[in-house]
Length: 191
Image (spheres, rainbow, N blue to C red):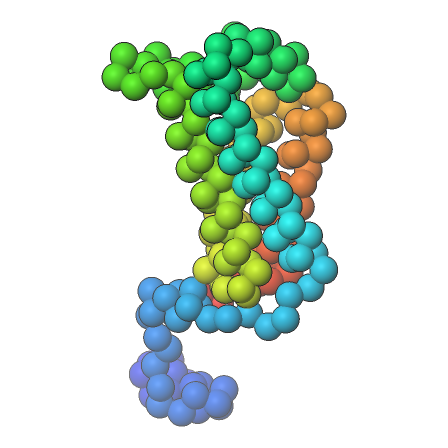
């Protein structure tokens, strides 16, 4: 039997879609983004808590950074943070990117302002993810998966260069979040 328009239409009728063509993927995706997901489970509640706590910590860090710079305690704060977070300017991708940003933009805007703005933008992203997940919005699940997934390769490079308990833990948490949301919530599946 030849496969043609008639047999495809017959297949649609057999699957319960008589004569209707499937919507294009951009329309399905747009509709998917606007949908509200059913009741959140415990894992999603933990993700919401993690995102909101992280955004609060980033907000406090940005305010502390600006305050320490104005009061003259920035050098001491920088030394403490480098020791505690095991950061150094000669190692790691993230440190090199931050150094490049400061060198490129430092002549126009003070260094502290650049870092504080970056922290505020990251806090805004984390807050948006947390509030969107709390309001059970599908777009927030996609945003969380994409924003977290983009940073995983950089975290892998950091862990490979200098593994610490903090870095390995952060990497595992982020991989678990992306894996759970993408697989369990069936993101990117029938879009």
